Image 1: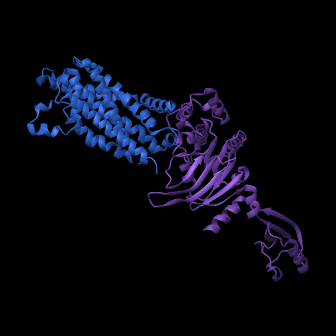
Image 2 (image 1 turned 135 degrees about the vertical axis):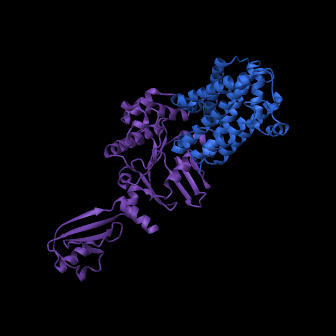
Image 3 (image 1 turned 135 degrees about the horizontal axis):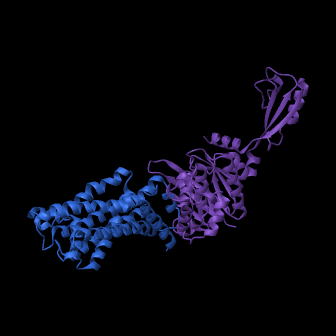
Length: 253
Length: 308
């Protein structure tokens, strides 16, 4: 195992976060705060409690997930796409580094950023609403698993994308709608039965639901199912990454 | 001693259908400087890229230090340093950070004393804390070399290292290449500056249309393929070449003041004695004479042209 290489890639990526602090951390925190002000305080006060949880508090896990999902994808996809774009990827590809080590370095850094971001947003949320966490270990487990899985997914997008437009397409056209329609801002019990059924096909529902369960003990779907879905998606991403490195798809000619 | 790099029937066909390498076989000896010459698109960079792991070969095999570059990539890549043709750097990194980063990728712990020496050798020491985007093109090129040497490779690939660099850097670079060779590093370089290959290489391989046309000791290549030219400065200007000289491979210079005779140094007879006798018989007198040996560039141009 080339631990120095993992450390080199990880440190390099984390240094990028520090350089782009505004974009990586400050901007998502600001937008989340705005959500709390608008939906939590202003509009939320007129919405009745969901399963005994105030709407503002109900929003917290959903908003954290929204940021964690989008930032995991954005950080990881950019992290690998940029060196591919400017050509510095040659260095990693010609070094004695295994695909597994490359993935651990890039995805590990992107996931670390997401976990930190999630915790910062959680801390920010406590400034607006009182948040209780019934299962802190599970909360952390869901946060880490989601961060890793979606950073891996972002890594795949970063490799697949041929240009910066493609880099934006999947997060913008697929992930954002899935997150908004996956119960981040409402319980699916509030939907008509038909739309409830449709939502069960949205993988984000399982992430948000499991994560919210770790806070308040309430969930739209069984927490075991949530965990299973994350692990399934993680396995799919791992398989795709290993296929990419085996074939050299979009990395080597 | 077995070669440090053995290339066997290596071929590469890109997805576009372009056949960049056609069954190339080549041995690189340990500790030598091999110059890989060839026109643009001949397959030089593809060949290097396959050996370092940037491009997948379509067929054939390559071993480095006796190990297969695919099955044993950790061992083979750890031995190799690459200075690519394009200057690609992370604009926001400092010189020190980017070189330490490369060393880390090669699985080595930080070695500040070695990096300091490397930066001093490449006249980069006073730039160590500067971001790469603030450096000039020449300085960036030096950084690329420092990165390639950060893990003390046994084999160094220099892909067009002197393209677009000034005279001073070029001199520094060749001095460095000589020092590296003296320390036992094997160097494979591609260059368009054939005079440099002529000056520095031990052996020359010429590649064209994805095929190695010739691999030879530089001196041997020049001896084998070398032609000499004899220039005779005439006492009296000629307007046309006399009939008596038509049997010789001789030409009259444009201004009519010089006769130019090209001959093969390896031929049994160079024909010089007969030419001089004929000139004497024809009453053509000359003031001075000089000869030149054809350069590697002339040989290269001839080879590529013949092959085409």
